[in-house]
Every structure is written in C-alpha cells, then in structure tokens.
Image 1 (cartoon, rainbow, N blue to C red):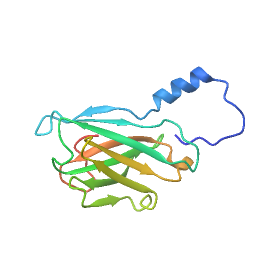
Image 2 (cartoon, rainbow, N blue to C red):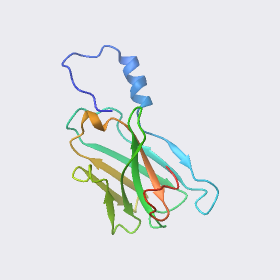
Image 3 (cartoon, rainbow, N blue to C red):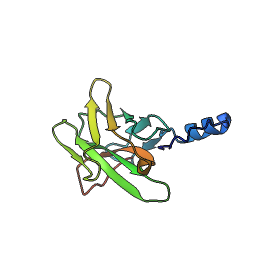
Image 4 (cartoon, rainbow, N blue to C red):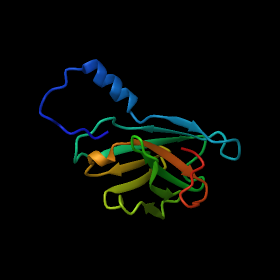
Length: 148
C-alpha cells in the first residue's frame, strides 16, 4: 500500500499495526501435484510505503533451486481489480521481461546463494497499491504461472 502523508499523526497504533500485518505481503502457496509438487514460494517485504519510496520484495524458494528451470516472476492485484503481470526473469538470469507500463521503474534479480529472487520498484505511487505475489512459470506461456 502506498499511503499519502497528510501531516497529521495516526493515533490508531493497534489498528495500524494490525493493518500493517495484514498487508505484509507474505504468503506461501503450493503447486498442484506434479514435478514441482514440493515447491513453495514465500514473499516478504514492507506493508506500507510513502509515495516516491522504493519497494523491495524478496521471494524465498523452497523445494527447488532458482537454477532449476523456467521463469521467476511477480504479479500484483490492486483492491477490487484483477491480477496484473509485473515481470519475469529466466532461471539462468539471461533474460528478463517486464510489463511495458512498469519497465522503467522495475527490476527483478536472482540470488542463487540464498535461493531467493527480488522485485524492486522505484518511485512508488498511490496507483501501485496492491497485494504483490511472487510466482513461477516452468516455461513462459503468455504470462501463465504454475505457482504464485
């Protein structure tokens, strides 16, 4: 969530913390049965940012390696809207693809030593408010993901 600052302090600390935890962008989802049936992805990152700040999210891969196969990517869902494809990076780090509308502000990188990959989006805007998911695609197919 990108929150505009109004200059007044928020006196609802408990409510704010609860909302922060709810928006923390952490989830783990399993693949359907098959070759990657033990793979899980776990996202982590901030819940609330101010406009113009930089979003940095990580995705920990378990049950597979980044070098395994396919594409590692990110999608998001704004409140009341459908899923939006952000971008992907190939498992060997050679190729990246980004949504045209986001490519100037978006970078996806891999860290093989930690078996994690990352999303960085610069200059966050109110329109970027969404739940962000990391995802895997065993073979790029028109933005279809096996797991997210």
